[in-house]
Length: 243
Image 1 (cartoon, helix red, strand yellow):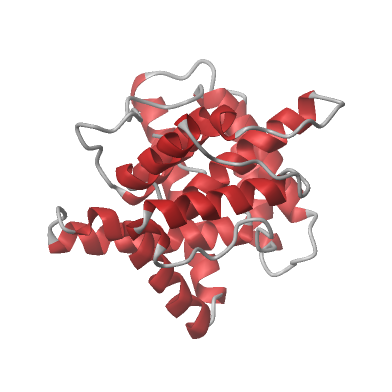
Image 2 (spheres, rainbow, N blue to C red):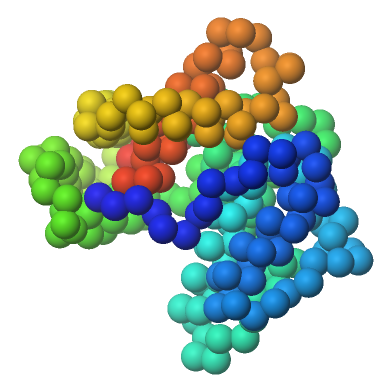
């Protein structure tokens, strides 16, 4: 399992300064476009400032840009530069996923929706098995045993995923949460103290726009969930849970 090489550690001041946030988005989009300069100005500047004002962490916006660029490049032989407005839907989708994972509720002004799963349970299992199988063949061997066991169990559940209903389906979803927690625990045990301290600081920064309206206990829960998400991101581990 290797760290995602694309997303950069954001400037801590960017979330408080929409202009700086836009500059960093512009720089990141330039890198993802192979150095081709894309100026963010006019309506697109207002669009990206809206992301900052909505509280979308810079790292999350970058992940949305990654998703858009990679999908575009996979579908098109000619790699024309991707404009920032084409990334909006992906940025909002990743922000939605981030809020789900860390337990941050939507504001009344938010344009993202928290209304249910993005794919069917069978499709979710297919995707997770494929991702975990790829990880199992990587350079990091410390997680081979847990990945082998997880893939084997998910592969067994996949055959029934299209037809199970009621309590059996609920039991499978609960088991997916348990498997996800076990994998995150394994990642946490392997992380050194310095790495965990760094992740905690990054989690503080990501949650900063929402902290004032979160009770202390809720914030602590979201903070831990955010650290877990960052651990998952750095290792390239997919979310096994299905909500």
